[in-house]
Amino acid sequence: MDEGALERSVKSAERVVILLDALAHSPPGLSFSDLLISTDIPKSSLHGLLKTLLRRRIVAFDERSKTYMIGTKLWELAMAYTRQLQIVPLAWPDIEELSQKVGETVQMGVLDGADIVYIAKAESRHPLQMVSHVGSRLPAYATAIGKALLAGLST
Image (cartoon, rainbow, N blue to C red; front, side, top):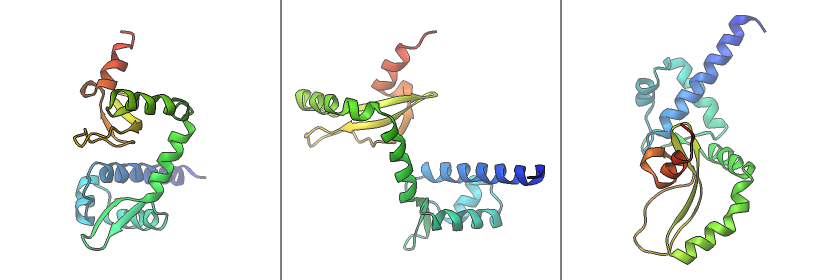
């Protein structure tokens, strides 16, 4: 593979990550125009990327709102990651038991850079609950899990 082709393939991979990151941080979805603005990907490249990602179900398109969003295949890939983390199946009985004992939602998260990514959650039966989702990411300093993990880091 010549150097130019290698650079193009890396550039397209970089663009896919930029595109998915933009979609991940816009819960209602983004129109094509919004994606052009937020990603700075050239129009023809963006069109080609979206076409491929739609076909592979990594991105979905809502006909009603004419917006793009994260697709089901990306969810499947994310769940494969959590299945590979052997700690979740091992810890799940304890997470569930703790939730039942204290009557509250119990979450498990991992530190990823300066953020916490939730990898498991057992919900309480209270009608009033904190809303969070497995796979969501929050700054570590803003969560109890994050503060506990940050406190354990060496300085």
